[in-house]
Amino acid sequence: MIGRRKFITLLGAAAIVIVQAPAVAQTFFTYSCLDGSEFVVAFFAGERSAHLQLDGKAMSLPRRLSLSGTRYAKGDITLRITKAVTTLKRGKRSTECTAA
Image (cartoon, rainbow, N blue to C red; front, side):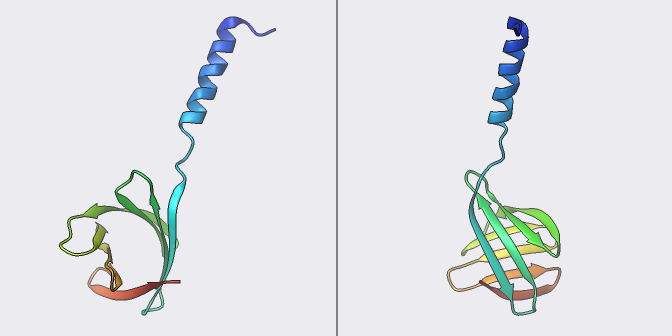
């Protein structure tokens, strides 16, 4: 029989595991770009970042101020999404991308 203290500790540990379960992605998009690159982007509920899998690396790009469309950027990588076009910029190189 489990003692009361052990039971409470076990119950508390189970609650922590349930609360810390990973967030479920709300939206995934796979993009193919004119320069031949491809990437996957995920948007999670309640977050203001785009999560990219690009060149074999996972990265989060925080949302930035934009006059038109939505822009996510970190370092030299920028993802801009408008109604007309999605653009991926790496350093000084920019390419248009379409969702596959």
